[in-house]
Image 1: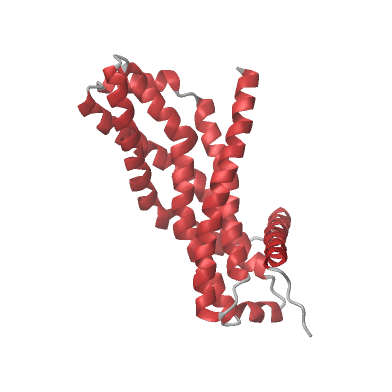
Image 2: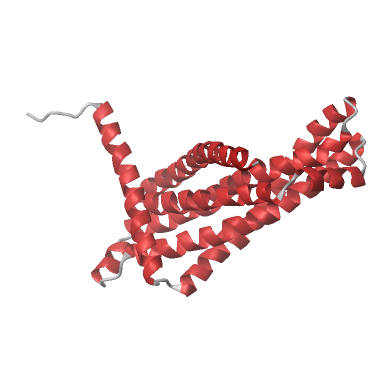
Length: 262
């Protein structure tokens, strides 16, 4: 007679197995990077996949997000007779939250899911087993280039997306009665280098979350084509949740640090 584990126990086991796998993948990747065991050709390819492939989507998404933010902010502040705060508020929102978070979500949805689909297909067709049979580490050959490519490209795309959001905010605030000179002067006075750097700092853990979750879900794929589909969906869900959770935690820490040195 066999005993079945209760669903709660199975869920707990899967929960700890997931985070244990992510931690192990992070440690192994970091070890290879420190040792210099990096395939630069594969890393450049992943930079192109993550960066060039996601750039246009990120620019459009963040650009219109900045426009929507400016639309509402300018409408309220113009009514209150304070149009001089529009550029600063929109710029801070973009630098600290909108640009890094929305860009990370775009890359998770596009590049993260692509990583899972590619690695998952390699697993179900036994290509990963063939790599191991040839004494080649799947982490070194498949994971490290994706981690490095995402780490290098996410901050760059965030900077460009931030610029697109500012342009969108400027264009949306002008019809509401905010003069261009007032908008940009407000931005220069209120948005600091610290705000810009805080937003870029968030992209480092975001990039690690996207790449590690995407690779882990791909390498642990089971169940053929249906398994690849499930793994791809779970990558997007877990990555988006991780981005928002770490965004809150980092915002609390950065806010405390800023208050300490201000």
